[in-house]
Length: 174
Ligand SMILES: [Zn+2]
Image (cartoon, rainbow, N blue to C red; front, side):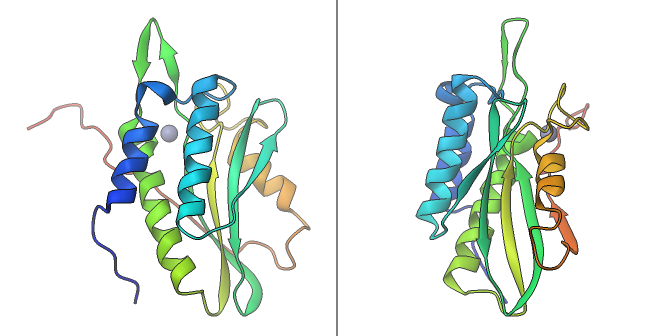
């Protein structure tokens, strides 16, 4: 069993960085989007992974992907998107719950798996770009491009897909 504390220093640091003015809104194709991606790459490297960027055509952004091989040529995918809406009407949409917090969880899962290599199926850890409108459900959506681009590239088709969304804001707070 893998155990980790609910909020590590590294996880908090990444979530705060993704929600900082340098990454304001994390819109793909902006310098803030680039800064967010760089933060994710750096954090995953710090967790002991070897992430690479997968540019998504037409998006001016890129997924961040790391692979931990297992004992068999099958993979489980753990994914969370790191982009958000950017600025709308002069207002920054910070996207802490959608989806910086889940990227923090992805980081901690990555760290735990990197420290104790998976047995059985390997694990693909993916931080997707371009998951918000206008890219949502389009060919420029990071996870759609990833799925299409990987078709035939992996020895066995991807069997499982675990995606995460954390702390959605309720319309009425108690
Ligand atoms: Zn989202």
